[in-house]
Length: 362
Ligand SMILES: C[S@@+](CC[C@H](N)C(=O)[O-])C[C@H]1O[C@@H](n2cnc3c(N)ncnc32)[C@H](O)[C@@H]1O
Ligand code: SF4
Ligand code: SF4
View 1 (tube, rainbow, N blue to C red):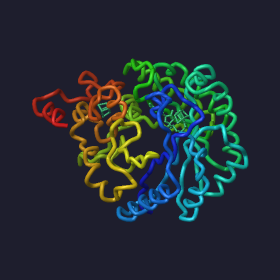
View 2 (tube, rainbow, N blue to C red):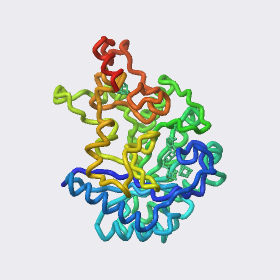
View 3 (cartoon, rainbow, N blue to C red):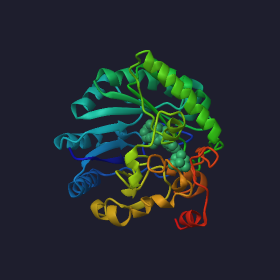
């Protein structure tokens, strides 16, 4: 089986929410909402297939928006995936999901449907809109009953970090198949950006305990430790050890940016990562993806340029979240603001003229 390559494809900005933290609307909700035409969608699809043919990869699409179901050619695109037997996940909103819609998604090859929960009822509805929390939890069963896997994602910031344990209880009670969280990337919105490394470590500790308790009780929700700082946490707590083969210096884990993932926006702009502002590397209507992967993506694979990670024992497995680093520091290779690794806890080698020079040359 060929290795997967994932395309996060935003077919439309159309959305029936205007979330406070959303990177799409952070410039204000007056922005011009973009959607691809049907011709552009077909061109994009075949450009992605060509890429996978050239690099011998198996395509996997994360179809999203906005809310992708609001695109007038949403179902037509899914028929195209189905014709080509391409697996995919939808990342969307709960509002237009019915039993019949979910069954149709399943019949066309959809594997997972991802929803967002960003706090308990009051906080979530403040971030998103009134009624959104209850509707989202209700639709988990609608998704499950159609045989799709339900995934819940939380975007963690200082504003909602205290509520994450309660969110875990709520999504487990609602029967979600998968739960994960990632961190807020400052994108010009109005959220508090002062979440400290110690506060974030404390959150991972509480969640870890909760995940273990649920697992021991036979809970069927899979807790996806998506944030790469889990590797740091698990290294410290003895659950992760650096394997012997890592002495070869290769990259084995951590952020996929520049490796097996790209994002395509409704304008056709190709981003190394949707969360990394100004990470445009081309345009899918003008460029052959297979060509720009070599020429324009190299800037995201300079692993020695990480200002802090290049001195860290866990560099081959973690590298934190460069999108969060970029959002806080303006530098993709800057220090992850929630990483607590230090020289004192034995993870970082001391700065030398040589490694300082490396990070400056990024
Ligand atoms: C853009 S939304 C599209 C799918 C759907 N509308 C939703 O909200 O789940 C995909 C994910 O990106 C997250 N997101 C949006 N803006 C973000 C930001 N500035 N930092 C981190 N995550 C963000 C959302 O919370 C959501 O989980
Ligand atoms: S629902 Fe999703 S796409 Fe719409 S504003 Fe919220 S985060 Fe953005
Ligand atoms: S320094 Fe980088 S690689 Fe090391 S733990 Fe922090 S984010 Fe991860």
